[in-house]
Length: 306
Image (tube, rainbow, N blue to C red; front, top):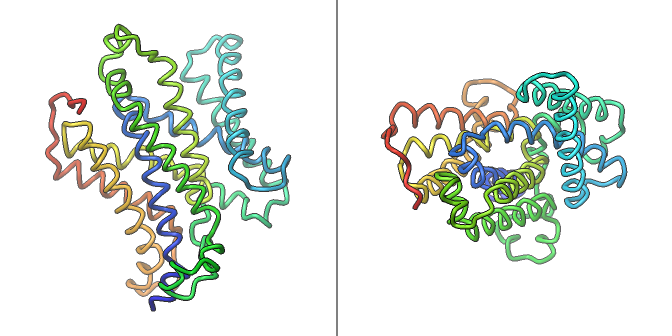
């Protein structure tokens, strides 16, 4: 039983948990800044960039994917401005048109491209590929100390682990400027903090987390990872540090429970097939948010930036 767990379930659970935490950390500040839907925008924009990067390089690698996502973001910004000016419509409508059009373009590119050999198709782009990220070289818990077996770990695990380290370092290094600019942008500017550049850096870090989580949960369900754990954590405390801690706990809990329920839950109810792990992780995140809304302290006071 232990050997089967290590081979089939350990790495998907780890990848899902790391991806959830990597998204939740910047998600806290996006939620507090009332910019939570930036996660939605990122998830729509990165898809065509990732697909084009694959078509050019022929491989699903971290650097080309990030560069592709960055180029797609620049194209999105230019298109939004062009639609807004030429169509004389308000920015929200322009963003809605561009984001959905770019996402649809990414889906069409996937359908017309032969990407099946690297598990990059419409289904995986939407729902992720978590179930297939297994550790075939593992033979039990002893494999955790076996260099040969460790060399066969899914590359996605190292990718999301490095991304989480980068996101955590950014959050730790810029904690005070992020907190000040989130709660009082004017005061932060008076202290010499470049709030515009810091806000852009937060979006870039969020995009990095979204790209790294793409293999695990796809480009749509990642939205739940950005929003649900931080929003649930906000209902548990009025202190920023504690909120970030709660969000990490909720992110890990949703990843573990979601994967277990996706694989074994249908069997408990007499159903034969499992369900999407990423979809169940998002569902559990929503349930945790609902429970926090009902049973959490629900403080109405201003959150404290400590």
